[in-house]
Image 1 (cartoon, rainbow, N blue to C red):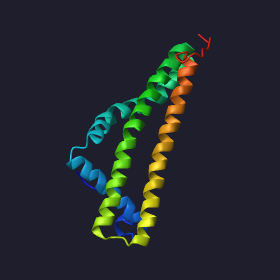
Image 2: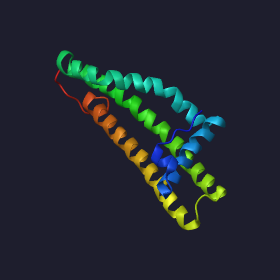
Image 3: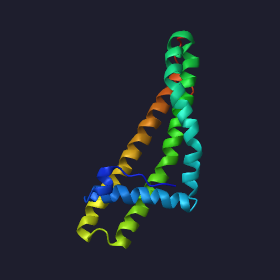
Image 4: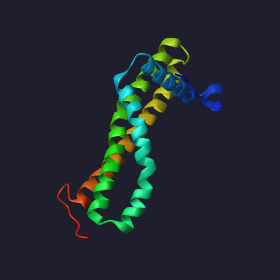
Length: 157
């Protein structure tokens, strides 16, 4: 509903500033056009925020006061929620970057030479989201194995 930009992005003249501003406008377009993945992601935000808020206290209590199996199952739930959020975020971010490229190209804000930099910034940003998703999935698999759900087991009950 509002495009918020840092002072450096708002006043910047670099390819990075243009890319970030256009990417954020891409999100605004997603919202305005009812992009389904954005709606799902927005609906998940309160759930993920709650899980993230409770995660550390649950881990600390779990380490000392509950059997390992229960602790591991709670970890599975926490990481499953995070991984789901990351998976839903991927298409949202890639779509916003795709929209950003179209915005910059169609508006003439950047020259063909500058577009190389804009694309690099947007692709690099996309890969950071991909890396976060893969890390989250790896942590989830770790806890699935440790909990015994995926074949591994631990007898610390």
